[in-house]
Image 1 (cartoon, rainbow, N blue to C red):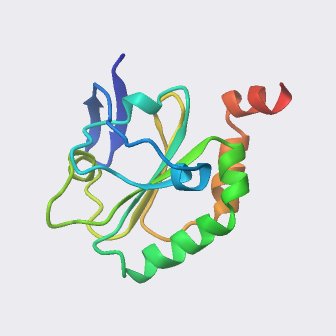
Image 2 (cartoon, helix red, strand yellow):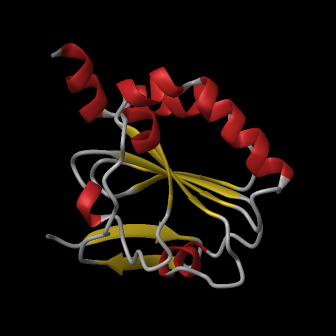
Length: 146
């Protein structure tokens, strides 16, 4: 596995290796899953998926609940764009990725198939905004034309 560079507010953190994930029972479960606490990177998704990381201090966080409701309502569009939504909801035991992004509360991060950070926001983001950004990416344009 090659190295993946993910930008953070403090600069660039280089993350290498593979993230272990459990097999999902169906596509809907595969689309929305927890970010494993031991995950050091997103190497196993590179060139296959566009991870959307959602950080919140707790599952009951109002921004998290609203963001997930919006994303679940757009699951067909997410699946069409190879998006997987990974939630990290434990700020007491920070995962290596949480430490790298330092959300300090709610944060959503879009990572491209190339492993680069494409969007990083501290507020609820409309799925349409994510789709519009993805649809301008050269790789997505190629995918849509095939």
